[in-house]
Length: 326
Image (tube, rainbow, N blue to C red):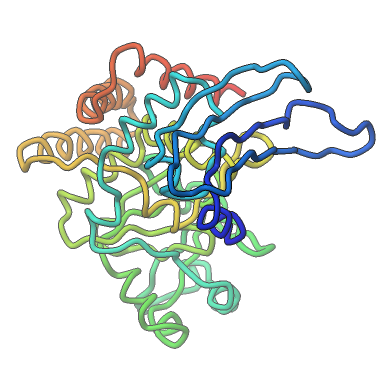
C-alpha cells in the first residue's frame, strides 16, 4: 500500500487493467494488474478501470471520478459490475460508524486471547462469584447470542457454557473487564455475512477475532444493530472490501473495516422507529419465532435512508440469496 501511495505522489494514474481472469502462465497462478501512468501529476483526469477477458478482449471498462479514486489505494472495488458500483457510491455518501458511536474495538489482542484461554471455566464450576459469559464467532448469529445453545470453540478447546471470572479478567486487563461490563454490539470475525448481536447489560465477554461496538445510548445501539445486520451493509462490505474475501465465500471482519461502514444519520424519530423494529426482532429471536417480516420491514426502511431504488435493492437481495445458498 505504501508503494502505491508513493506512486500517487509522483505520477498520475491513467488506467489500471485487471488481467486476473487471464491464464498468463500455464504453471503458475498469478493475478496480474497492469498500471498505465503519467509523470505529469499536475493535470490528473479520471482514471480508467478495465477488466480483460483475455489478453486483447476488454470485458468491461469504467472511468472513476478523480477525487474518489485518489481517496485511498483499495482499487479492487472498482472492478465490479456497474450496478454494484452505483450502489456503493450511494452508500458511501453516509458518514462512517466510528462517528456515530462511542467506540469500535477489537475484543482482545493475541496475547490477551491466550491469557483468556487459561482462565475459561464451565459455568457449572462457578459458584457465588461474578463472571462474564464468554462468546466467540461461532456463537454469534444475526441479532442473537447463542451462548450455551451450542459449543463454543476457542483455541483448540470446546466449551458448553464458558465463563470467565471478573477477577481473572481484571488481572489480565482492567480495560477488557470494563468493556465486557458495558452495553455493546458484538460482531463475529469470519462469516459470509455480518453477524452482530446486542449485549445491552454487559453480561458477555467477546473472544479473539470478534469486534465490539460501544455506546451508552441503548436506543442508538439498537439502531446500529439493525444497520449492521442489514443485507445492504453486507453487500457494501463484500464489494468495498473485496480483497478480504476468503475461500468458501467467507470474509475477514476486522475493527478497522467495521469503523468505516457507512451509517445513515437519522432524526430521533426515525432512529426510534428503527430501534423499535429491532426490539421486535430481538423479542422474536428470544421466543424462537420467525422475524422474517420484521427484518424485511427493517431493510425497506434502510433502503430509503441509503437512497436505493427498488431495482438496486433487488440486486442486494439477489446477492444475499446467492451468498447464503452458495
